Length: 356
Image (cartoon, rainbow, N blue to C red; front, top):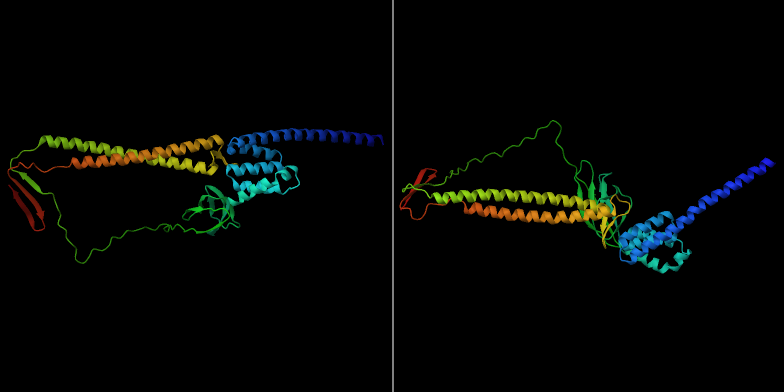
């Protein structure tokens, strides 16, 4: 009997310790949640909804209450994420009796209506089964996709790819409140049979071949036997300059191409994890941080500008090289020659004409 009572006392004591142990973090978390919400609202009022979003996300992770869900939904809508905003606002409004929801129910309802007006749907069908579908660089599933995907209204880049098939890439305009249906049937990449040899057969010649006489530049004999040494030296110098400028055009165009490829790579990294709406912001749940998003954006814009400079410089140098080649071409003897003989090969022999 005494042992039984002692056991009950011990159990009661440990139960009280457990209650105190679990109750303390709750009070601490509640204070932290309020601090996070306060900081997030401060940033939102300052006109920076993007930097404010992580504070509301952290608050929602610590305490998934109707109030934190509603605050997160409002922040996501302001930052340009209507799909996530609609989800969290709906969650908040499912508890209409909660004091924080009852007080701001009309504002939350209006925000939910606004979010839904900015959401469109995309349904993708086609073949082959198992083909990967990505939207703006983010995978949304594989064919067949059973249900339409909700997307924010914008021009979305849809890519469908599968091993052994040609890739399909298309820009799709997503309109709020509407559904866009896309059907893609990828074409197989035909490969030659193993061990086979591809032989290129030239077309057969016509029955009566057309003989075109080979043309040669006219042979000019200057009866004076002299040459304009100054003109020849000048042409050689211009021709050398033309080759140098032409090489510069190739280098500039190559640099422009390399920078263009670098800009596209930075753009793809940015579009995969970041968004440019009322400032550069990171996409929650993606690999890049806020600072990395800003760096990707700066690198993208810088590389794009310098690639344009490279292309323009290459084109200008190419035109300059062409002009130099043109003006350095060999010229005919001066008009002061007393007697010249010009000969040109013909199908029947050699035709000569004297110029006096």
